[in-house]
Image 1: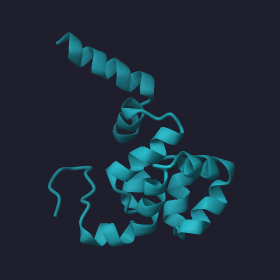
Image 2: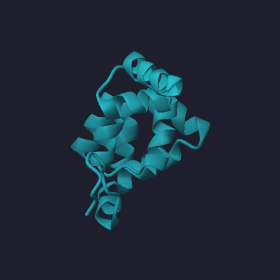
Image 3: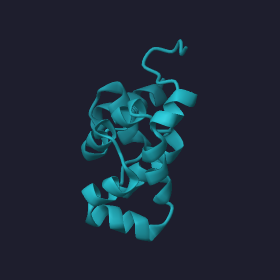
Length: 112
């Protein structure tokens, strides 16, 4: 059990749940695969057998939903990179802020 609020535990059950999603994201190590995904997202997801929860999270480009769907943070970074999402974009998603709000919060911490 994970005792950190808002944290998705990645255990054996989540690894099994996210196998297809993580396998697809791992494929993004190859530039040709990233290009193929961008050219036909639906077809690429079907090729890997993503379930509807995973496909919906991919369509939304929502990292929190991807984690809930069994995604592993290390593999999801490959997906986020395709769309130019950086750690501040992901931090904003995790905190429910806009990227500008999240950046302002980071800057405020830096001033302290």
